[in-house]
Length: 401
Image 1 (cartoon, rainbow, N blue to C red):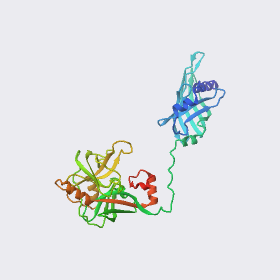
Image 2: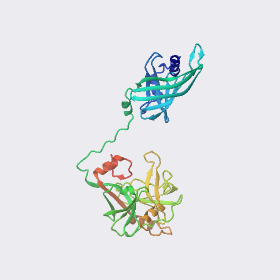
Image 3: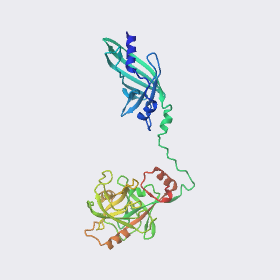
Image 4: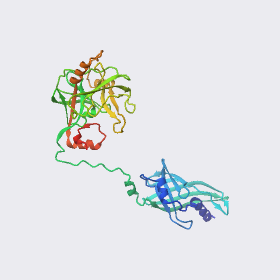
């Protein structure tokens, strides 16, 4: 009786799993154009005394796996990975018919275990307790399945792996220090303190500013990588200094951005753009920034964003959208964020102006208190930072392929 029940059990588990659907259809439906987990693919059970050889698909389904009968795309079991190369689940059955009668049966504790013996072989086992027409039996069924597709899992997954970035080739000039990138900064004290972005001076061996036709080396006093701010100091006494607003810019407030977009490639003259505050939060709901429609390009980073009173209401920091082919969104770091950073580093600002300035006076302030910054670094470091891609430095075009 137990032997008969065992045969019935296997028939229930594997009933009519004949290979009717094509491999190509299954591959297209369940596995097309993606990497596979180790257990995924088409698997063949060899023919034995219980029935002919058949093929099933095992595919990822969220955090678990499903086994699918190819003949009618029917899910015949679901299971999860319990540990490395081992999978557990529940054995499932089809109705078993004999002499036009459906055999009544009850399963309990149907314990399915798959073990991935190698990339191309599965050990299959089902422990069962079964009652058929009042007769009970328990035991286990075992089998060994071979991979039908892909025949080489590693080779298949390699097709979907991202190519490794080539390491920059070494050259005799790698240790040479040269001007690599540019940005903008602005004076906030008569003793030579300058504000700019952290990413403008990041990785630089030396930072130099151009002031009244002269190059002067700047010392980095403090940085805030998270808010993208930096304080520099030079041995200069500027004639004009920006005051910093004590209140953040308001929605629709008119603003001016000053700086050196695209470095000196366009011209050595300072450039300005006008716009308004279009949102009180930056990208990703960053409330330490605001959004503006004033033009902002690489090289503008670290420049002042001012109102008609000449007060700094923000620091130009980034643009978003140019590569996506849509109108760019430009951002500035709020004056409140700048004030918190400066206060923490013992830097005090001039009190803000209370009245609007004439455009002539604004122009004089912008010209004399805004500086062009250049970052000097080794050729090797330039290659490395460009290869890492996600940096925001305005590298000179000579170094960007």
